[in-house]
Image 1 (cartoon, rainbow, N blue to C red):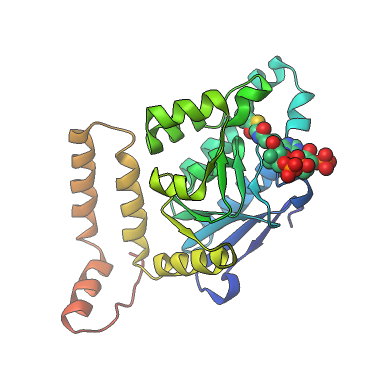
Image 2 (cartoon, rainbow, N blue to C red):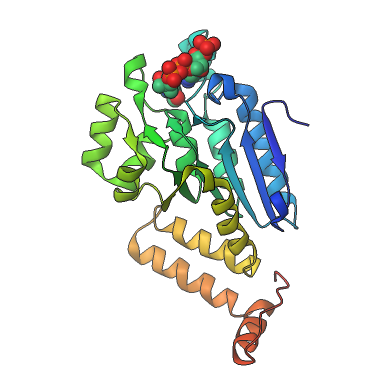
Length: 263
Ligand code: HXC
């Protein structure tokens, strides 16, 4: 049972799709310690549940995905607290590295500071027309602390990322799509249905191949081209030994849908 998020498996009739919703709408879903602790648990449960094959993370209410780390909570803390707790490290590394199955951020409004950083931890972002992205930490006398300076720069390049971090300005959905920060922009009312549909498509794929594809694409951010090409080739070769490869190719030749075993 969670207090600051909600979790729905097989969400809205989409088999294999988990919907996780940040649920502090009055604080624009600001990320306090409890939210992030509960997110770790929810993502661990999603990863462990063999029946769930794609997750979607969104924010409740009409205004925000998440307006950032909770400024009221952070204002109470001393530098020693941030440093000694290695503030943000447990949350970010636990969510990102231990979730081998795919997840999508459905950004329904403000995604600022830690909210933008959380969205960028997803495998990809689908944004509503109302989405607004930004790293406004500079205005608070700090800087991104959950990966914003790194993931935003890798996503949209140095010039735009630097401008956003230095001015704290927001980027709207149209610019975010043009800048490759998001995969797709959809009408606000259709965001959840549309993202769940994409998640259901992913959940219908052979599950081991899904994890393998995710691992390969992520490798592109971690290593040189030569190393990444070796990783790709080896994972591809391992997949050719799977039962789902045999089934997938037979199903194609026999003009029918594949029945996946997940191995
Ligand atoms: C705590 C927040 C909050 C936040 C909004 N609220 N953002 N509470 N932490 N990050 C609360 C407000 O205090 C207010 O509560 C309620 O949500 C509604 O917000 P308003 O400001 O009244 O709404 P609006 O005027 O529509 O403005 C929306 C907004 C603005 C532009 C998104 O709220 C805003 O600028 N928020 C802060 C954005 C930000 O700076 N994020 C980065 C945080 S730093 P009350 O109780 O007053 O009604 C960060 C750090 C990462 O993420 C790493 C650091 C190490």
